[in-house]
Length: 322
Length: 168
Image 1: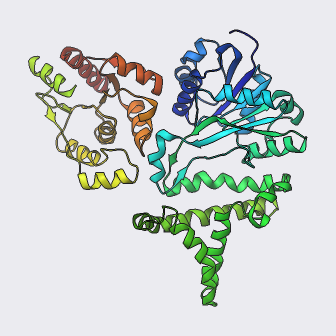
Image 2 (image 1 turned 90 degrees about the vertical axis):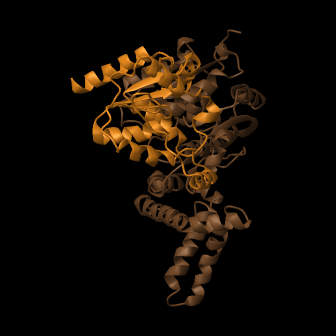
Image 3 (image 1 turned 135 degrees about the vertical axis):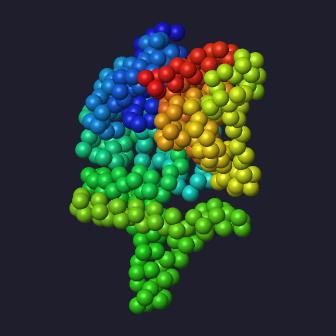
């Protein structure tokens, strides 16, 4: 059924050309009629890669997919998404990420939810990619689970009315991390509701990293202090209003307990909640405990580095967030 | 596939392959590295892709002679051959024999890494048949040349071409 474009999908891509290709394949299988949606990819790939991965895709030949290439090194998720939604044709803008695989009914379900809640932001469900579940056995893993409506409105699976994006001025391009959270907070402040679409499912990649790799990957989270400074209301979601999550709270206890234990041995008790949680992260059976124990030093290094990074970000942005 | 190619090259006389490495070639050295089952099991439990213990074994075997070329039939063998290429400067050919699906392109740790690296860095990329070629196009955005396993002449031509390019 040919008709006006109801919804545009916008994807920012950098350094993940194969995952982007898999995303395009998943979008090709959407059940929403082809004439009712389009797709804009904003990327910084070289011409040869763009030709192979994007222009050579059947969605390009069908006229559904357009792409915008920006100079390598000049992109950021915020800037690329802003370029994308401004170039899109639809009245509704669905965002997903280049490390995601939407289920075939994703767009149809998002569109139906948007129809039930006109003017609202719509958040779908995100889960770890079922095809990559084995990778969850790795010690340092990056993936995403969201049961809508969650507090952070990540762009892995979210839909905004275009006029709302125009009123808000899109993503804050000064934000290096948490730009999607910032946008949703501004949307809420502008009176927009956030509606849940639990049947609009996106599968998020499960990526394992080495310890140095995950430390590098997590460095960007130090810029979340900028988000907390710009949107102090987000602190309601934080344990004690200053910790990003409960892991960071327990990690701070670990560091404080170990640091004070020489003078006050009883202070080591501050480290116990962290040890207890770390020992339970692979389950309560003996093998799970043994694996968790073996992984504990790496987890400690990772989490202490994360908290230290957040402390550095707090200094830089002059607001406390650990 | 490797068995088919071995027979075809044997029929063709195997000429010119005396110092060439392939996984299973007549007139060439055949490397069939043995994995370490106990280590494989342990790695499997931690989510790693199968066959990782073949990589050091293949690399060690490649170091035993002064081979002209390596022809791998799996991404992990290609990764070993690419490491060998860094030292030897000799070409690496990869034949994709497995039909790719979304379910198996990144299902285990190091699977995507080895697949992407092998496909991007090998000097020549082949596929066993049209189905494999189509799946490589869909999931890896590459267009390997289809060379049937019994086409010894085409393989020989490719090897000679790669070696000539190296020496040229």
